[in-house]
Image (cartoon, rainbow, N blue to C red; front, side, top):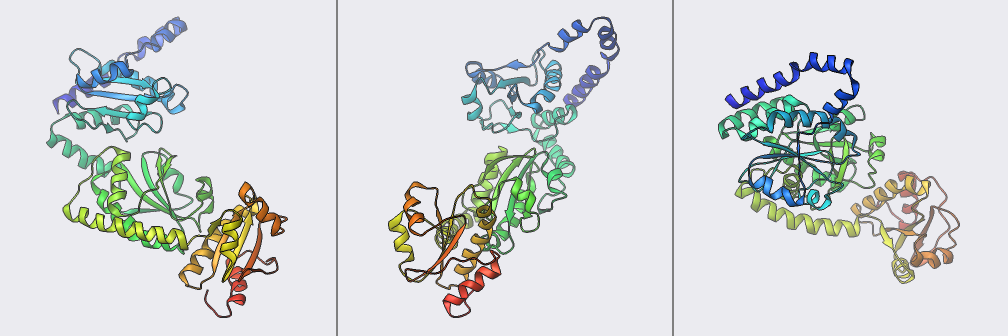
Length: 420
């Protein structure tokens, strides 16, 4: 606590004492003040000096890009912090790495956005990513908590949990009104879903359990948003299927999660993204291994059956339509009407699969070279074109409404009974 008090006094002294002299100097000579503002206190590291620096003591590193607006706003504060901390026998060295010059070094330390702030503690292999607000009190509090005794750190963590993340242990249900503010700062793992989606329904209890497991990790929130109610948000984030799981930092999409959807794998992913190992229990590991195998098998089967079949080439097309009822969408990726139809087509495929009707829902990309002759032979003259095939025979082009109920009603005529 003494270190924290000393640091607080130093911060206050730095913030308050220079105010009048700096103001007077600015009035007397602007150029002199400009030179003073440009003075650099943070240690600039490169691949040759980085390892030696973190091997010699605690180092707090700002990974940045010169063109980044957030980095520019943080720059004066970072130099101010360096002026405080970079003294004789420092508790921590304040440093920086230009990722436009040292891309490999930044990639090694999982830098996916700018600025990324990581604390490298002496003797520890894993760094700790700073996830709080980028102001001097929050950053100095973070340094003190991480470098103090374990007992003090535990107390600081409990306090931080209360202040920073009131949503610990639960899934935050987002709306069009709350989404932007919620994800504007910090780390967020967001599920974009549709209530009718069977994959979303299977994931729901695991998603709730993930939020409970992260109760000791205040640096991330687990959220969800219903794309059938809040389409504009989902369109902004280019959501094209359900569920889509995105990792968002400070309002920016970092990446789309593509792993299996069991609890253990999802937790491991969060660990990787926040840089903090989460608590594991033997039961969780055993349960997770079983769930991984089950989820992988389930997901493979679902991908093959519950989504529209993507047909490619004449041979595959002929084989697909040879037997049974096949409803095919001929499309072009750039076509606005095709894009609008896509979620309905996905839903039609899902419900046809769930109903075990035997009907196949498929699609053909007419812009692909291997499909050019197929689309010519099938007399596709515009996009999207919808043709139904029964035992290899093409029916008249579907020209009705492209709503789900109308498409289902059309299919029922060829099935001969109510299976959808």
